[in-house]
Each structure stands twice: as C-alpha cells, then as structure tokens.
Length: 121
Length: 107
Image (tube, rainbow over all chains, first blue to last red; front, side, top):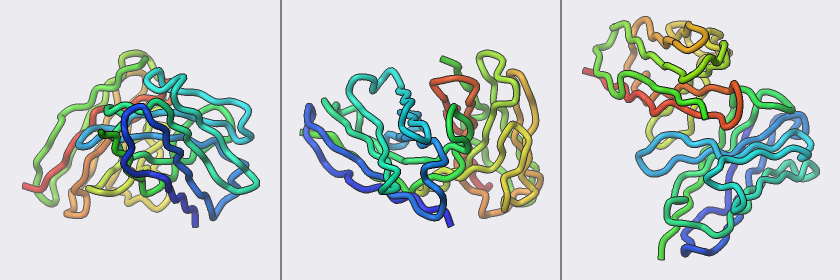
C-alpha cells in the first residue's frame, strides 16, 4: 500500500534552516509528481511546492519562493523540502502528498501523516 | 490566484441527514475540483475528484457535482464517522488553492 512518511520537523529559531524528508513506499515513486502542503495551527491547507516525476520542473507558492527548495532523489524514493530563512509564520504541519500525474498537476491522492515545524525564538 | 470560497464554514447536522457544502471558484475551473475530508489530527483524504468522481474505496453516500465556478459536495445520509472538516481544491492552474474548509459536527 502507498505510504508517505515525513521526518525532520522540530523547533527552530527564526532565520534558521530545516530540511524535511518524505520517504515513499508502496508505489513507483519516479512515476509521480510530488507536493508539499502545509497547515498552520487551526487553519486551512496551503499548497507550498510541486516537483515533477523526474525533478526537472519545480513550482512554488509566492510565500516561499526563494526561501524553500523542493527536490527529490528517485534512487532513494525520497522527497525533500529545504526551508531557509524561516519565519514565525512558517509554523505549521507540513504534509507531503502524491500527485495523480507524473508531470503537470492534478489531485493529491495520497498524503503523509504530517510533520510539525515550529519556528520560535 | 484562483480563490475558492466554501459555504458554510461550519455545519451541525443529525445522523441520517442530507448534508450539502458548496464551493465557488473565482473563475472558471472546468471540472478541476477535488474534495477532501480531514479528521482531527489526521491528514486529508481524497473523496471526490474531477468534481464528481468517487475515489476508490470511498462510501457511495459521498457525491459531488458542478462545473465552471460552482460546485456541490453532498453526504446523502450523515454518519457519525463523517465528522470532519471538508475542503475543496482546484487544480486548474498554479498555485493550487483550497477552500477555507467546512467543519461538520453532529447535532
């Protein structure tokens, strides 16, 4: 069965960096685009970033463009989110999610359980 | 960016009731609309895709309709396990955006 497991979250000071990982299993990882979506405490869902199946195309929300970098290692079945210059407003649960398609964008058909990132001094 | 507006923001209904949530897009998104269910402390779960298609394994009491800018999500007979927050999401272009959510409670 499809499994997505995030790791790397925690408490970090404003201005510092953090890298999230998402380990995928149960499907051919290299066949699918992958997203990061976040949810601030008691708030709704906010799309962050998308990477195509082969890593050649990357897209970002304006709120994180230039600060966050999405990447993937298909040999390790792992998705990453490098988060730099973190702000208190980046505090959220971060989800990785699979896109139904390999390139372009569509529905998010499987989600990880989420990982909490807290940005606080 | 396309804005997705859900109504109502919260809803209280009884077991067995028919429940309807609407989602309006700020511009035409064809049928590029997905509905998710999120239970407290859990990840979202895909229920309906392309506005009206039921995801495999999802109970048939869930349904969706609409196209263009106006969409509807319906639970035909509310069950206790349906207590959750429901989100619509478009994928017509980037950025993908979600509605603000509809919190469903049991009366």
